[in-house]
Length: 457
Image (cartoon, rainbow, N blue to C red):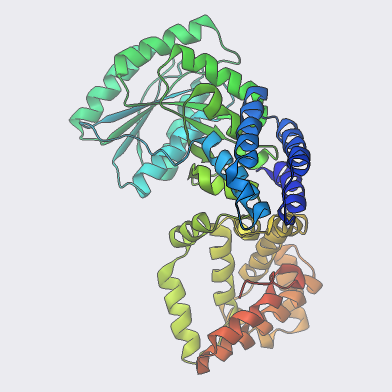
């Protein structure tokens, strides 16, 4: 997300932050480039105008003229205005009420509403430790009811049954009654979408809102449709008392215009970002972190949280104990490390959040690093337990059998064995407490044989 905007802004801000003194002319030039970058990112025109006016006002004032490093100060002003445009701070869901807290999901068809219901249910269950019930009131699309039932089973939450011959209001009342009797903390209601805004849709959702009296009314919009998403959000906001927005398909939007526009246009905060199709691909929206990403400064806090959530601490401890005792690092251990990396969203997901590494993340993506992880794992899975423990003993015929079983080549297998041997050598250095040496050496083990970027040790 924001790749195009990040590239354009990085070039502009690099040219101005290097200046010892800022003049009216070079501020004017920089702001012209920033304005162009925002418009190309499909940011709404009123938002661009307000943003540029604010930056100009602060940059021309005493803040810059008295700064020890005016170039860096200009960058800080741009960052602060980005944060201000997107909403200052993360606004969490307001669930502090007598259970069940009801969340109503609204939006157009195809925005990813039903998937977002499942993602939010999983988020509340796993991170907030809530007992969650989901229900579909989309009686016009039986596939949506079935989809939610399937997703609910996948994430381990209860889905209240509904069918196409029922009325949405009847479904809503029955679901509330069930949630109260079974002591659910949260009830999430999926609603019908349309391909466009129409009066029938608005009347129905207003009635549902009146019946449910939800504590949160979240509007789900597709980031890929740019300014149209913002206009749609405004129309829904005029009809419903929205409390926030979930921006879906953000991982597929290189521009980021909707994220920068929606708060300004609707006055409602973005509360979550949908960053992929999987049910765990939902992130709380932190304007300060997103601003850092846009300016190529990374998002280290989100990376730390991602590691804490996804890394299996027991397996990590077990591996450390194993290698510090001098036991051999085998292919079973390598496979576990590959799986941990995939759980974190792969190499590109990590690099994207590290400061100044946007281009490296793109390069890694182009090199299909994540595909190589999958290929390596497939090769290891095609081996017998004995072969994984003793890869040095692989004969030519065994190699041919393994590559045939994994759909790879002997060259792929030999490359994997070489990487494993190098990693095992580095792991061996842990025996004497040489953790630092091991981490430096691991740089050459990345897919494609590339070194880790400077500064990652």
